[in-house]
Length: 89
Image (cartoon, rainbow, N blue to C red; front, side, top):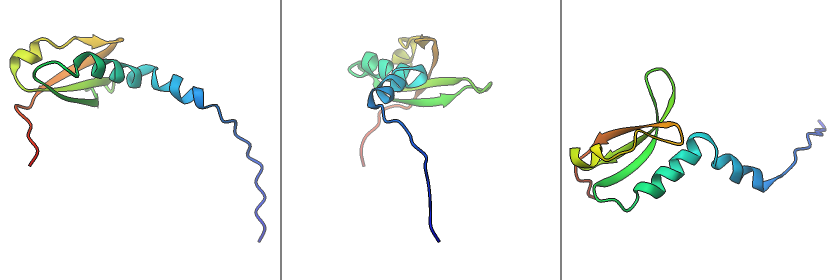
């Protein structure tokens, strides 16, 4: 059985970098840069709101840090969650 494929795909590595700076991925990178060295910041990730909208979830140590979070980053809503101190086992 012979396989004959002719599915040419262009390779543009710069496109991946551009895609990473758009939408929630870009907002996630920007949020991490803004929050990384703040006291009480424990981590972040992506989530979805009840209506299906993308959002950034930020894990913080306490209520005080939670109050300092921005409402959004580049138009992407920020949701905070108090986790307390996180330690490796």
